[in-house]
Image (cartoon, rainbow, N blue to C red; front, top):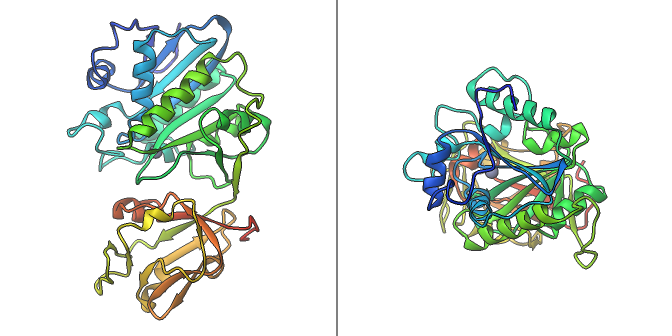
Length: 347
Ligand SMILES: [Zn+2]
């Protein structure tokens, strides 16, 4: 079969012996971006899994390694993409999200595709288009600790069903950042699964069990687990930091930082936070360095956050998630996502 991409190694049906003795050996065998194609009982259909778009998020790779070692035959053909293999292989293993000189691969699934990361993203999209899977799952880990959740552009029975294979919590967002789950726009049900923290063994287990269901069920697009009531979080907004903002994680305010958050701030992940709970400190003159926009670009910062003196509070009861305690991610991506606790719109 010709896949028309020299950027991605095509590896058809490796045997359990061929994938190596360890995840590290498996990565070394792949050596770069790879598509592993596992034939299923029904050769007329295919489902896709992508993982390792971020080099420091190992759960999907570990789960697929285990799946391959066990030699399980999927219900339909399984197309497994491994993105940032070289990044993951940089010592120490699974350390870099992306290499310092490269763009974040999961922000590259839209034009322009004119740098190495963009070309790799485009190659993945082209292969998906050619092989036309009936569904796509993109497996990640969160940067901090926290529970598993799915991210989807759409909420409908197919996206609910895919989510339910892994978790009972789903974020629905129209925010377009060039992430792979935006592939939903091409009418292929697609969800991102954030399995939980990269260092959390439960995240590996969640990824494995979800992949097992995804790979072995005859039908993954009709909701069956009616006992799993999905918690839907709609239209989250992101707290972003202006380029010149400085952020520190400390128990006490750092007078040299624009923003100080306590090191355990991620314990707020997915819990309800009332407006009387202080989130951290912001220097009043640095308030402009915090940015909260809706996907349409409307400034809703005053509906999400308030500053009393130099103490930062929620402006109303909120749910926060993907709170990061990694200052680099806080600055280059976002500090957290937020929705109102009652599901009302922020726009
Ligand atoms: Zn990720």
